[in-house]
Image (cartoon, rainbow, N blue to C red):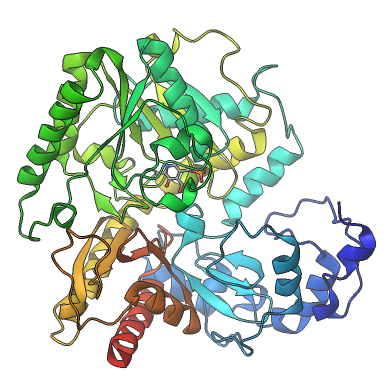
Amino acid sequence: MLSAARVIQYAPARKVPCAVAASASVRPSAAPSICPKSVRTLTKTARSTRSDHISPQARSHQSASNNGLISPHPAVATAGHQYRTMATSSSPSPSVQFGEKYVTAGLSRSLNAVVEKGEGSYLFVEDGRKMLDFTCGIGVTNLGHCHPRISAAAAKQCMEVVHMQCSIAFHPPYLKLIEKVLPLMPDPSLNSFFWWNSGSEAIEAAIKIARTATGRQNIISMQGAYHGRTFGAMAVTKSKTVYSEGVHPLMPGVYTLPYPYWHHFGLPPSTPSSQLSSLCLAQLDLLLKQQTAPRDTAAILIETVLGEGGYIPAPPEFLRGLREVCDKHGILLIIDEVQCGYGRAGKQFAIEYSGVRPDIMTIAKGLANGFPLSGVISRKEITDKLKAGSMGGTYAGNAVACAAACEVVDVMREEKVLENVNERSQELFTALNALRNNPKLAPCILDVRGQGLMVAVEFASPVGTGAHDPFVNPSVPKSLASRIAKRCQEKGMLILTTSVYEVIRFIPPLNITKEDLAKGCQIFKKAVEEVVREG
Ligand SMILES: Cc1ncc(COP(=O)(O)O)c(C=O)c1O
């Protein structure tokens, strides 16, 4: 434990000593901080230019730009603000140095800074920078940071019941959330709910349900899949070795199926998705004959849109093929919508594009817009096989998180968020395809792909990350994706890379305005042009 005296060392950047005890009061838009007093002092100057003082004209401008459908976040209106987009110093601030010293080296950070506040599509950094957030905390704050209605719903719940442990009793938001989410399910058979905390835990629970319900052990997951960092979730994760390197053995009984994407097979981009799907389904046939017999196979697990594997939507015919194989052999189909669900891919759930019925579905991330909550949803006849007490967890289905999630459902419907996703998605694809069609940039861009506002640009690689990459291009600059992401940061926008290839992923808020999306596209364009020019 850090002593209070040592914690005071956190504040020297702000030159305001403070005690560690943070106020427990709940204010809808208050960002928690280690030292609220010093934060207040530090931001006093900047605050006068922030949201509280935004002109009515600026508010109505933002509202008009989205046909009035999306709640305006005050900080989104940029007129007259005095925030910077660029860092003034390249050396880490004292707060960051403190974090670097005391926070585990096992965490990586794409922005080595302290974010003090988030509002709508923007983040505010302690050094006075205002940054457009195209990460949404990896697809979580999908309705923008500190959405006023969601924060207010959580604050209200804080004064009613905060924690009602799920093995002791129900609490109202737990049940209300089921009532609200039930009609949204991609198939009416999905009628048995378990609220959990994180995506990884949801995956663990899904595996446990599948094993219990089928009496079988083995799980087939996809090449490139990401399902989390707990031991079962790590075992079914196939996106990067970093997650499990050095900590084997993992959960046994996991088999891997290739994912239907052209360059994974050394095929050209023009390869039809039907051909890729057939290839992978043939591999599945072999897997079930050569490695894991159907009678030993509990489930096939797939992200509807591969996330950490590069933002690649699964072709509908592949998902339908998996459904057929599962039906034939009594294998359960687990659909992981932790990242691609909840409107991110342009429909409530990405699986809707294929019409495929999941046996078990996992959801999280955007579900509660930042409050930790995940869900495992299945059929009652499947979950009725579980023994009472076999599921559960101290914080599972926390009341504050469930209350926030209830509000998320209402906001998404009332503010017509899905419509916004699809309109902005078209604009994003238009902007990115324009880059791909630019003769100076075209040799560096392999693909623009995705669904809704889960979109990726894959750049060519000068060295290739695999012997089968047929698009190794010796003249292409190195590390394009990470250099471009860094350049975007320098220009005031946060954006992430993904996969073992050179991929940048776009995860803007689902309620982003037309103007902010255009601004982000412009920053990205400039960053790509500069980095490619520099070589
Ligand atoms: C598809 C998918 N499944 C599972 C997880 C794990 O979720 P968590 O990080 O909440 O444990 C993630 C996280 O990124 C994910 O994208």
